[in-house]
Figure 1 (cartoon, rainbow, N blue to C red):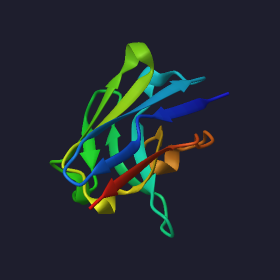
Figure 2 (cartoon, one colour):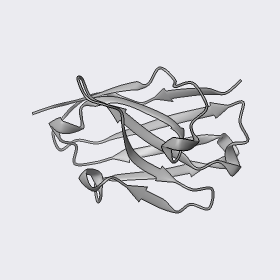
Figure 3 (cartoon, rainbow, N blue to C red):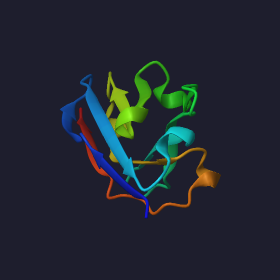
Figure 4 (tube, rainbow, N blue to C red):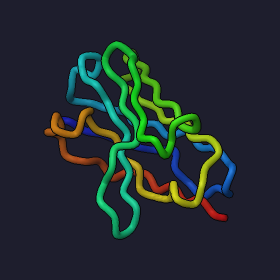
Length: 117
């Protein structure tokens, strides 16, 4: 059974930084591309960033240059370093496989990121 546990969220002022972590279990982590997704109140969940098994990355335009996705296969963990945060980044952040059509695992509880202006 796949389990995804996100952590690292919090309340931060605009311009601040946070580092999110997602530990995966129950999957062969190293062969899976992984992504970070977010869902803001009243909006659909959207892909924020993805990283392939080989380390290639992709980002939604709104976070390019501010967010960095990385992975540690030895720890079955994917990270999202977020800098220059904006109020519009406020959302619950989740991880799962990437791209979205590959998702078969249940979503974790997510981690709340709140950016105050």
